[in-house]
Image 1 (cartoon, helix red, strand yellow):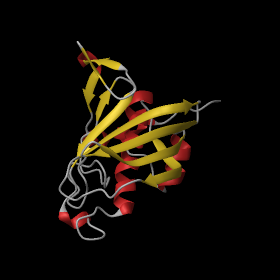
Image 2 (cartoon, helix red, strand yellow; image 1 turned 135 degrees about the vertical axis):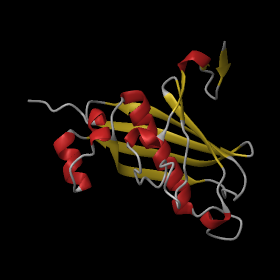
Image 3 (cartoon, one colour; image 1 turned 90 degrees about the vertical axis):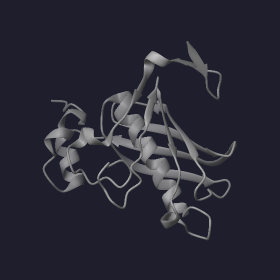
Amino acid sequence: MGHDHEGGEAHDHDDVEALDGAIFGEGQPCFGCSPSNPFGMKLKPVREGREVTVRYTAPPEFQGPAGVMHGGLVTTLADELAGWVVIAVRKQFGFTGAITARLLKPVRIGVEVEGRATIVEENRRTLKIDVRLRQSGAEVYRGMFSFVVLDEAGTEKVMGMRLPEAWRRFARAKVE
């Protein structure tokens, strides 16, 4: 049985997958999704069909103005969600190339945020991803993210290191 989401699309419960930052190896440092980063968000996104969703409640340490989540960290939440839609839907790892963000309302500390990311345009190397965040029934953030998907050598160049083994399967295949 499906359930309706904004936009009128229904997704089967069979097409829902919990995502886990541990797929990138034990002790991976990602601020957004690492289950072991003591300062991170520890996000637990979920793939629902071709979308990725997340629920997150910001702690007091993530405040900018009193009671309001720091705008840069709101965008970090959205960026992480955009990255996970690349991983979950394309089965590839991408790097953020550009962000257009609209902070529509303050994101309150201690109040759950619901996020949704959808790929709206894609080709072999680049993707455009729409990210929406809602809190207490209102849209609080809207962003458009451009991601670049690189082959293993390109990924290693960006990272400045040899690609960890657990990440290799997410690199774009090299075209000879």
